[in-house]
Image 1 (spheres, one colour):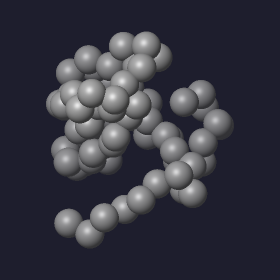
Image 2: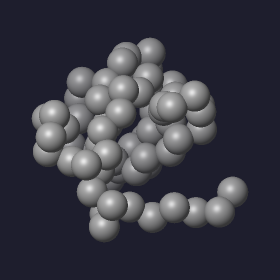
Image 3: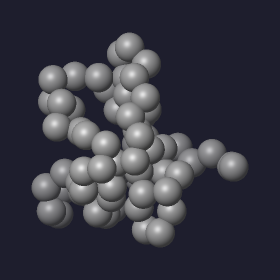
Image 4: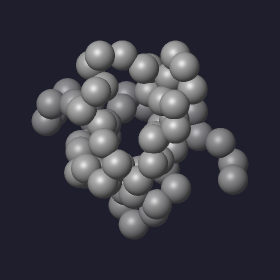
Length: 69
């Protein structure tokens, strides 16, 4: 996301991409943790995601769900 577009924006490294047809389950290293999982729609807009790449990730709090590990 663009800076300032979301209240929660962090630099992250793409560790793993797991394709599930209509979405990609992506594992990031972010804020010192390497088990941050994000479900991303599989679309032409996400072709730049590559394992090992540094990206900025962000979200709106009302759009996320945290699960107890």
